[in-house]
Image (cartoon, rainbow, N blue to C red; front, side, top):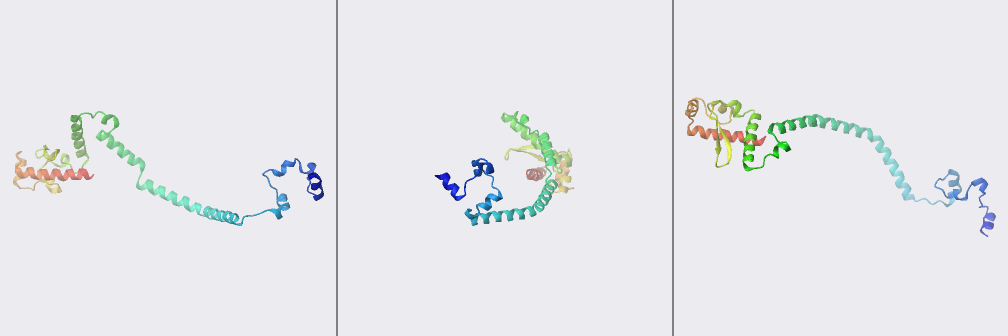
Amino acid sequence: VLKNKLEENGQHHDPSKHGHPDEALDSEITVEQVKQKLDSINVDIHVMRQRLELEELLGQMVIKLPNFFLCMAAFVLGLCTFSPASEIYQVNRQLIQFFELSTEELAQVKTTDDIYDFLIQFSLRNEKLMASSADYWCESRYISKEWDHHLDVPLTSCPSPRMYSLGFGGTAWGTSAAASGASGEPSESANGSAVEASAAASGESHGR
């Protein structure tokens, strides 16, 4: 009965012309098929509008894409210029080697005595990196190192006129402290100036 109705309406597909009947249900739609079913095709106007707006936006982004790559290249170049990763890595590596801060070396610090020894060695190495350190500017006849029992930190006293001229404590030329320091007998005022010099140097070290 269905076959007769299809023949009467002229909707019967000849297998010799159209191939297998299931071919009409595949995902490939030709222009001819669209033209034949144009009267029965429903189009959602909102979906079509979204699709057209998306295509327009993509076209605008393609135009802006070269500017994006240009700005990104300038940003990466500036980042490598003002913050070079390789040079920063080399500095950090040298500091780790100089202060002996590697994992293997720190693993050897286990007891309380090892901790104090490590702090003393760290302080001595830190003074070697300071341009205003007493190791470079203080004469050997003025320099003296002692332990501050109140602060529990090592202090370096240097009642030297040279340190005074640099603005890191010390005593002025011609004073009694400078004279006593030159004779090898530092006075109480010299020790007070030495503490101030050591505190100033220690503050600079902590700042760095």
